Image 1 (cartoon, helix red, strand yellow):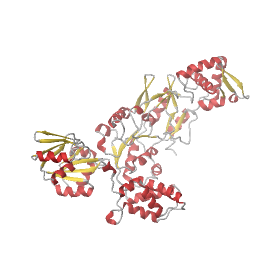
Image 2: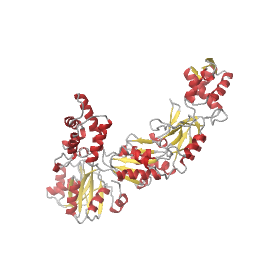
Image 3: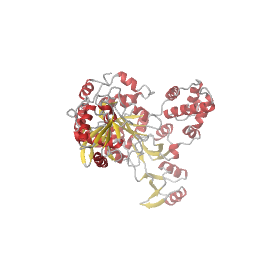
Image 4: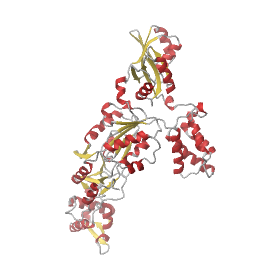
Length: 583
């Protein structure tokens, strides 16, 4: 297909013919001889054809170099046939001494690299005019064939791939954020990269089989590989150190970071906000590579520019407010994935069973549907996720096998549902977000207090308190200001102000100071102080302002004002910036 092997790629293939002599190759003769000597020393005795396999160097180049090495008393032939590739070589004492010195300085003894100059020239040619691109319909169809629903998310990904811009994808756990993002690199054209680069006789490793998938056709020069656009992902384990190119002493190579491995493709920072290090430090580390499409690595203290032309994707179970404006400019598109419709859960469940090769009774699909059907309609009212559909299919397979059954029945499905930890917890009405206190407190100011209160309870507010013309409410952290704004606006609520309150040091104003102090002590305050007619109180994170307001109302305490001392505000005018998320 031309999209995967267009005219530019064909011209590059013509340019990357395998060098057959020292005059044609970009490496110096001394570098090649040292590489060969280290290989012979490592193996003890070795055939020329095996050296050819390891280095990717043409036999003619090997012969030119190894005849010289014989004359220099570094190695000697000890057997083999008439043809040079069949000759077996061993190392001589002088060669052994030199090899030990070379190996101590740099133990690399593998595929011959490409010089930095050639790498840079070829890469510049490829990346020039890479975006915008027109993605063929058949490529789009093939890319998303395994994705159920999420049509707006697909549209956003196509737009991002077309112009080479990043996006932010967020929503509750289990909604398929990582899975759908992993498909995006299939929308991009392939790219040629060298396996290794040589710079000042040091070797930099670019090709990583964990992230780089080889295309069918390959250049004649085996030092180069044609790969599909890479999809490189990192998660909560990501640190600043892992974003650097570091020397691996045992391999003798500089191992490149995810920033460089993602060149020509997609870099996903998954689980943003759950890294051990401050996620803002990690995001700041990306700004220069994203801005310049280049990364600086240090080879023995010398700065070297390499390409980092990737599309960034940031994913989180939190919300878009985790990123500031400087970071969002580097990923101007965004996708919000909500809890999927039950029909899509059923379809994913069926596809997973088919993929596993399972036979099943059709009744199991209606039984699974009841798990997510609202209680008022006769179901269990559990929260649906795509992760459930995948996991339940696999658990059901295990139950069927252990029972010695031929196919999955309703009884087997029931057993699989009981074994799924998140479903079991939901059935016991244990909310993980609440159990871990992942709650967020909002203050919503509106003249339509009662109507807004009713709507917010319907929307899933955990607790609500009234404060003059404001509503104080708690939500799970999967709810964000954008969602609240859009929901209340759709229902004709006039919003004056919205704040997110995130800390646990509370100031409240009341004329009943002594009575309030007594009640605060009884409900678990950690520390109390009086400040200008207000009570300053510290609580554990298990107490929210909404809960405190309700507690005082129940005990006839008139609270004139209650607020968090350290707070993150998202005012109305700022919320507008995050409107328009795909859902």
